[in-house]
Length: 96
Image 1 (spheres, rainbow, N blue to C red):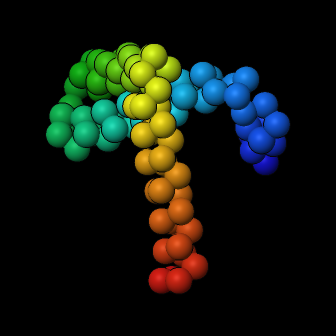
Image 2: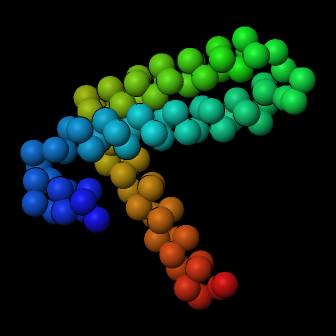
């Protein structure tokens, strides 16, 4: 609720921060989930798992930078997550 109020009243002032956070979590989430499905197995060495985590964190920062510098990518990520949240809400309301 606090984040919603912050975005409501100070939306344009924190737009760059919002785009960075959305880009970071989008990049980190997409890369770590794809690496978890393809590279990380139950018998994978711990060093490889840590390397995948570090690579995902760095990719998240890169994606956050891209969403701030290229606003169309940032708005796309925002719309992607808004659509995902609305789809989950509608699924729980009508199809559960």
